[in-house]
Image 1 (spheres, rainbow, N blue to C red):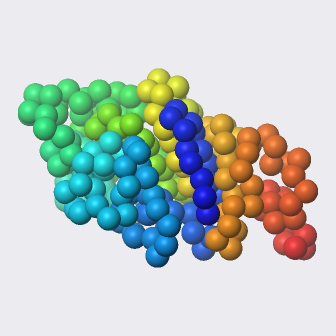
Image 2: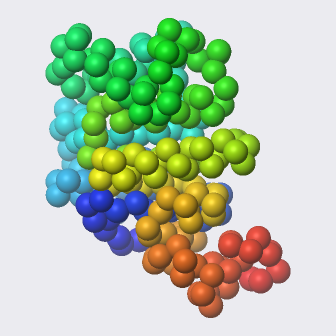
Length: 225
């Protein structure tokens, strides 16, 4: 595949399970090295970077994982502070301020001392987003941010993603199966199938395409292909 993402864009990447969406995301942050081709983040080639160089790039990227990926033995505050300690040079007072501001941003203030086991699925997602935005990234990567959530919580998370996008002008890449998320938060959608891009355009143009693979995905009709 060949694509570029412009500054400030919100790009949703969709496709059936196993299409390579999450692998693409892992390649972008250097957790997986591609067999071929080149990847540039912030105009820097990351394919051959060492760990220290990759960490410098990652300090500009906020990552929201599918299931929150919170450390069970740490409080909410400790989970968020850990990212700030590892990826920034802030002092303790500055970390406390960033922690508080991030929790306020996602509507989770006063949860700093809670343990992950005390949180619902939706709350864990919000804390994961708070951890990601606390480092004040240039880029935000979301891996299935609404998976496993009920419709009301899905809507809440979508509105939160949109609010962050509007307020911070962050470049976002969102891996998702949810067409509702695509229509509500993305200004561009890319569909992957068998290692190729089948669609690259505006969400509202999805339903106009004559591509049978795209039609099958958006209608859920397995008889189309």
